[in-house]
Length: 367
Image 1 (cartoon, rainbow, N blue to C red):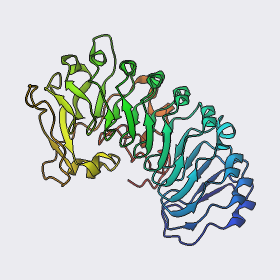
Image 2: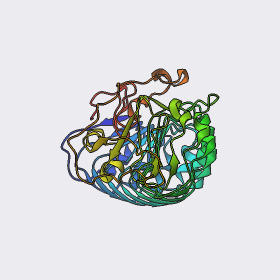
Image 3: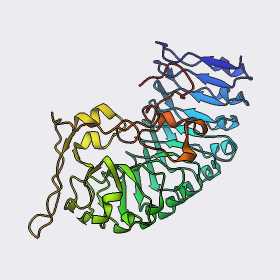
Image 4: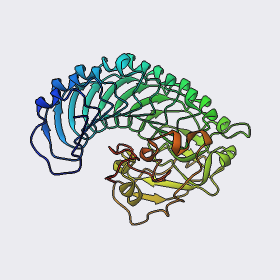
């Protein structure tokens, strides 16, 4: 037995530990079922495993350290009830092969292990909606093939590392929303030519102003979606920002002290309710809970933007076009997981939910 695919059925019960005897296993997928219990340690015998997918079940317990024996490239354990910490044992052992790691919507805690610095071929890291903590690891700067970094809805503290600008040629999506980050927006991000979606909302201790350097003619930052809602960013929108937000892209500034329309001609300015803002992956919900608004004019008496409404609104913005141009070095042919990279509600080459279990070369995609 080398492959086991039973995804998207109505399976219940537990995963039999006896399957560990299938020592030639390369692909295991039981996603989208109602399987419960813990992951068997016996699966650590799968020395040739390349893809491991158990997302969207009712599994619990810790992630087994013995799974470091895998030579895996694609792992998704999202949408379960896993607890404990991310095993540091996965670092060096998975380093040469791992490309996509999804662990969103669990109960994981602790830090991202320093040993994960060895994951230099990683393209997608999604640990959204857990209880991870500590500062954002500087080692992420070494993940130079990264296309999507999604760490929203955790407990990260400290500043946004300026060194993440080293991912300028690859990173398209960066979700750091709803953490406890502080400090200003790094000037160095002006060079992030591939970045299209940057969500920093819900970090109330982010301070400073919008960097005018991001919009100078020599810089190449072009965002399709940018959210700073519910932060402590202040000041006016620099006129130079006419090139930062792509035409028909959007920016969300509710709950900040940012004022003036600045260089936002041709883009959407949104106000999103708090629940939707802290989970932009649910695109239909995000749209339904968004309203269009103009930032207030800067004045000595009123220079802050309104706080978002907590209730749904019937005024939903018209969605922008469904495709944006992708840098030539990130074509679908050399980035197999592009279908999982969503930016706001925009689509890039057939957008899927960021934490989807499916690969774009498989049938049975669940939207």
